[in-house]
Amino acid sequence: MKPIASLFLITLSLSANSQNSTKTAPSGFDSLRADIPHGKVDTITYASKTVGTNRRAIIYTPPGFSKKKKYPVLYLLHGIGGDEKEWLNGGKPQVILDNLYAQNKIAPMIVVMPNGRAMKDDRAVGNIFDSVKVKAFATFEQDLLNDLVPHIEKKFPVLKDRESRAIAGLSMGGGQSLNFGLGNLDKFAWVGGFSSAPNTKRPEELVPDPEAAKNKLKLLWISCGDNDGLIRFSQRTHDYLYEKNVPHIYYIEPGVHDFKVWKNGLYMFSQLLFKPVDVSSFSKYTILGAPASTNVRPAKYPQILPDHRVIFRVKAPDAQKLQIDLVKKYDMARDTGGYWTVTTDSIGEGFHYYSLLIDGVAVADPASETFYGMGRMASGIEIPFAGGGYYALKDIPHGEIRIKRYYSSVTNSWRRFYIYTPPGYDINTNEKYPVLYILHGGGEDERGWATQGKTDLILDNLIAEKKAKPMLVVMPDGNMGTGGLAGFNENVLRSFENELKQAVIPFVENNYRVETDAKHRALAGLSMGGLQTLYAGIKNTNMFSYLGVFSSGWFANRVELSNPQYEFMKVNAAMINSNLKSLWIAMGGKEDIAYPNCKAMLAKFDEMGIKYTYSEYPGGHTWPVWRNNLYNFAGLIFKD
Image (cartoon, rainbow, N blue to C red; front, side, top):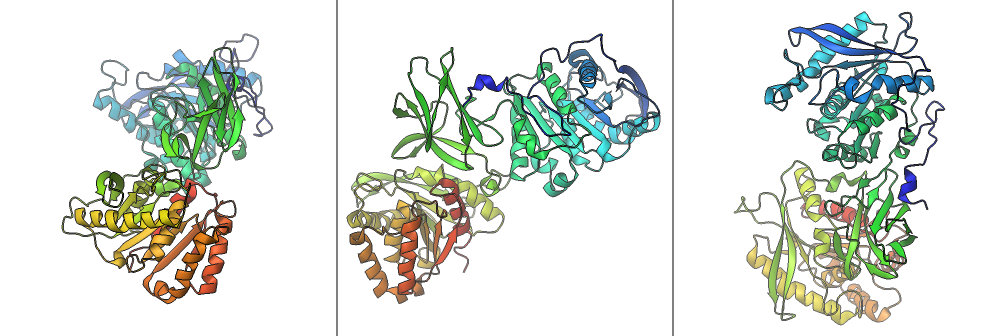
């Protein structure tokens, strides 16, 4: 396993027209060389009907330019504080491209550098953030499409099809490039945004039709420096594209909002233009990964690479041995500065607990948010999930998760639950709602479904799409006594049943606007919570019409616990089937640790004639599976 420092030195071989591409520009890539042919830089003037005046642009023609040959065109845009000369003054594009031509690394092309501020006085003077000047950058879309592009295609020997046009830019120009390029896929097939600014449209507006983008784009490039304060705009675009499975390169490098980053972006991007592109190589380009969404502010590590390998970096100069425990243990390597690093294998999508092992002691990573799991506070990391749109934060009405403390007469102690109230709960004061009581697993508590489980986002999205009825979701603490599965027996199960029936449900029904009959109550749980659901739910089908059992099943090797449950079910099978509208049982596939127990239990159900619905979602005994279980179960209940 190579330390992070070595990542800056690795050269990857990428199959794109049999070319070799490095991961970053080499030293001297922007230095003028006297021993090679040079392109030519000129200023042109074109009539702009959009602005109502003649406007200027800079044009670069490549070495060996001939009017007898037709060329593709790259439109290269500047930032908010620049004009048509900004790239020339700060970026040396002619030098970068000349050097690449000399190495036979880029296709011959014409590069047009216009003034992206489409107004009569388009100088970068005065208050460049004035609303009129900012609006002029949006107006430039019409100037570009209706005036500049037609002028170039009339006056220069260029190819006029969409696959021969590219657009890219830095900062404000990066936002323009994404807005104009993705908004006009009939005009541009190659789009690049370098450190794109806040003018970048929201992803849903940029790519409203992901399938069209997949079919029409040759290359979509998004890059940014890791210390750039605007990286969040690139990140949100990348996240959306990943979710929608739109191929693109997301390239993060060390740097800030400056020409060091933008020159490197041009160097990397230009080598891919107007050639066959290998989509399978896209994940190999980036130097750095994106900070995990579960990092504390402003921690840069852990970082997630596009192929879902994770880079961990921790400073512990006095430690003798460091490991990352992510189910598999990874040994970390120390550099001379006391930093320990490691890059993992590709990690499965979704949420995972992990620990930092310092000289054998498991502790939480100070760079990560912590979650109550494994019976303690542990670090967690969220790996992006392309299918995670059902728990994505969207521009829709949102409910709330609230924390409520109550005194339990069962335990004679103060306890608490988390409760989700749907959008409009505090407004629709005459409406009563059904309730889903949902239970966590062993080693977790009432926080599990609210944080790791993303219950509020799942329900918000389901309700907004009218795939689920508005409901309250109550997330109680299922730990009785010492908590977890230690000493788990029927007395513990009975204690929780009493807590649920005598404390939690009465408190909810006395303090919230809810329906109080069985057809408006559901009970579900994962793992240990699934056993509690089986016990309290099956014994009380007069109280619950819907039961959800996720990654759980009576222990096949603990007959003293399971046999009494089966005896009760055998005697009461007809009542159970009559009372329950749904007994929904789901597993995380064969890799789920509860799979054998569940299969043995279902065989018993079949033998007794207990009706149920079985579902599998691959992923094992993990939160990605349980989130999906909640999504599907919540969409089934309270429909009659």
